[in-house]
Image (cartoon, rainbow, N blue to C red; front, side, top):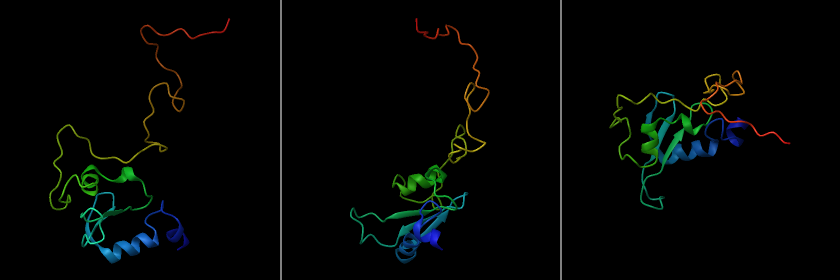
Length: 131
């Protein structure tokens, strides 16, 4: 209970959940379990647009929001993906959250986490040595 009151990184706080419950309507849920809401009316808005929220499932990490929902949250698209799905092109890959710090993180050849050795390049440099 204290975690919900004082921390935002483990999900929405009690205050945010109360505000969303009081003022917003459920719009949809993505494949990662994040839930999206939109304000019922724009009376409290400063620019005439309805406010939009996301409540993350688990750890609050912005890269867990897929592109179609990101576009809706930032008013790039008027309709949510539940009404008008974003068409994926053949060259697009499925959305993945940030994998930094996990075993699935990208580790290029020569990185400290990998072998630490890199292949020699054509025209490789000569390191400076003090005289």
